[in-house]
Length: 476
Ligand code: UDP
Image (cartoon, rainbow, N blue to C red; front, side, top):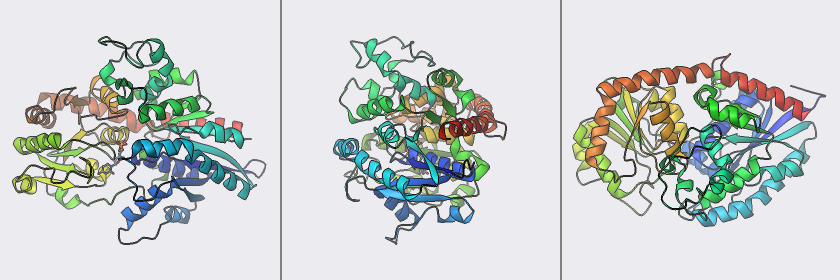
């Protein structure tokens, strides 16, 4: 890619959550494997979490990309303070944290980007930042950088967020009065009901921090030069084609499964992963239900109790990920009395695991998921049908794609109180019987589409190459 002896250099700044970090690192590796120089920037908080997850007994920060560089790619990292000490609880103090992220963080990003640019005149630099950040356009403009926005959720969600103005004009942001009918005017999005919108749009509260993040992010993204989406064109063709009319948009997913750089391994996990391979090996094919609500969602002790009772009632084998903060850090003893004794060797409760390893194991036959986008992509990649139990943000909308559009999962608790009866009924439906067979049939088709997208001549690879060509024109 060397043009006029000036090499392209991407400054990549992911959003500070697990579901955004993994695709951003993989994008960094993919670009590096194509000959780009990369500076990948984590917040110090995230960097320390990953270091600790790698080596809990050491306080030394690790250079995640050292191994990658040994394989010949030019990828460096830098860190930046998010303004708070490591022990500050960013979830509990979400509003205070984000006030500072809106106000002070951009100043630090600006300084760091300025320094990086000054340090090496032999590069032509460009910026790849997460769509949810409130500052990329201003920084790109200040340093005359090509501005690439990285979107780590479905294109359908992007299309809805992109058209918040339409929701406002139609009295749907916030919702006026009772709202029964479907929203049928978002370009590229099939009619969608209120319950399937993202949580921050259902809230009817215009002052939530989540909504502020989205509004600010989407003001910015309209000024981006390119948008990269971690999705597959064939799975969301209408939303993507419509977006493409407004902005150059490239579906390049699922980036986490791209094999063009798979030999390079980089630490990405924010928590230590428990190894459950031996346990999985001891279970019959398709017999294990995997239960996980991702890295952010929090449940209540009551709902966890209902799920626990249902898991015991159905007799299914299961792995259940219960992060220490799953019901808030103050809640201890969240499982019903005697649960551990009754589950015996049938179940495994872990704080965090290598989810891809679990989903790829032949003993896993179903997934109760919160419908985080990465979890959905991973479940499809490995062909595991889902029970959808969304909590916040894009998860209700992702569920609509899984259940109503692709028909590879079933609903749990559609606005109702979660009950042992419903959960056990849904587990039985997912793990055996006619509906289970139907879900598997549909899953085969969607999975094939997803795998094909990453073939050498597949849509995601072609889109990525097209992005590189268009980027080159813009850079030089
Ligand atoms: N994950 C994992 N181990 C776990 C639970 C989750 O590695 O025990 C990973 C999972 O593979 C996925 C990410 O964490 O890549 C969660 O992202 P997702 O978009 O599904 O949900 P979020 O955490 O953003 O709500």
